[in-house]
Image (tube, rainbow, N blue to C red):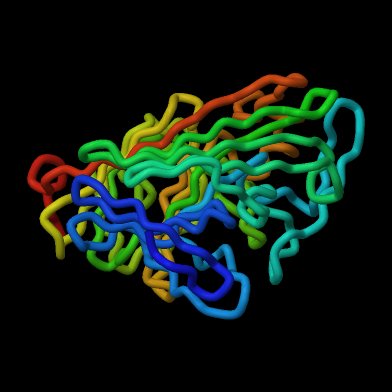
Length: 307
């Protein structure tokens, strides 16, 4: 276990070649490496201030993912309004758990259990609890979420994972999907189109000089990432409920995101127009578990490098 860094206490999980830094009070991963090679972008830890969640290596998304247009939607005959929750962002995004206070309920050398409790308020008008279990097992890292509606009425819900992977200029990504949403200037979904052309990653594509921030639909639940500068890659798998994925590449930040999520962006508004948004409704007391796994493999097994 490591010592505290400023006010952000960080613990290390290490087993089977994996090394993972965990900030329990934020419910976030701050580094993740395998055999000393960075898989996720390492957080630049600062002292004497509360860490900006956007700088973390990975954090959970709950009780919704991505943005809610204008912080407003209709549910069960009522108009719900949510305040913006991140500086510089006009639309609330990523839910409440990523900016909330977490507690560490158990830990070992290769596993940790974290808990988050949300009380109904302006950030989200329903109460819920979220448990996060992070486990290193052999060649894989798993992150499991359990969302429970603790309010007295039905609650709309969405879950997701937001990992920031390292070094897009040396990375190659492969995954299959059915289509994607083309966003408007605010980054919110505007037009759906079938997969093809520059957005088709089914055969594997280099991320060098790629610029993208899109939500893909009909994700098949499996993806592979390889890097030119390391002898292994990572296979990402997730539960069937995670039928969407957001792909974001930032050359400026030297990272890229592959985010398995259960719903399309702005699902809370699109659910009144479509039945394929992924939006789920939890009854009082109902629980919903999801999981994402990252398994390492020898690069030659999955990735063929092409220019």
